View 1: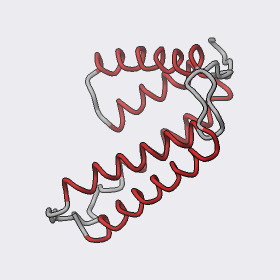
View 2: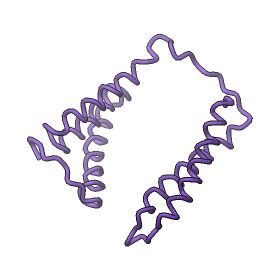
View 3: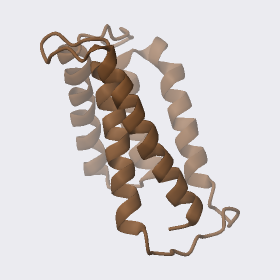
Amino acid sequence: MRRWERWTAAFLIFLGVGAAALAFRMGFGGLRHPGPGFFPFWLSAILAFLSFIYLFPNLGSHGSAGSLWQKGAWVRPSLAAIVMFGYTALMGELGFFSSTFLLFLSWLTFIEREKWKTIGLVSLVGTFCFYLVFGVFLKVPLPKGILF
């Protein structure tokens, strides 16, 4: 782990703890009736915890970094950006179900290069799970599309 990564992780721990303290002062509320600081508190606590997990097991290790400009090093990140841009562009036209299904399908096909059975299963189950989380539990109004 490089020195700047240690400093970044330590800064994020400091930032997360400080933000959690400020969010707690805003009014934590309860689980059934959350206050304005409930969500920021948990986000900042998770940030501090994950930074802690990243920092301390790797204090003594010095891994070798690969070159950023190797041939083909930017192909997958570029494809990921294109897929995510396409997802946001198609959400309004195709709706939530179709665009989310296409997101999973294209991500697993072009970026992860999974087997077709895995692609189909994860695309169907992932779209359904996203609908359960956002449409049913969080009651987010999802865009209607051509099919649904």
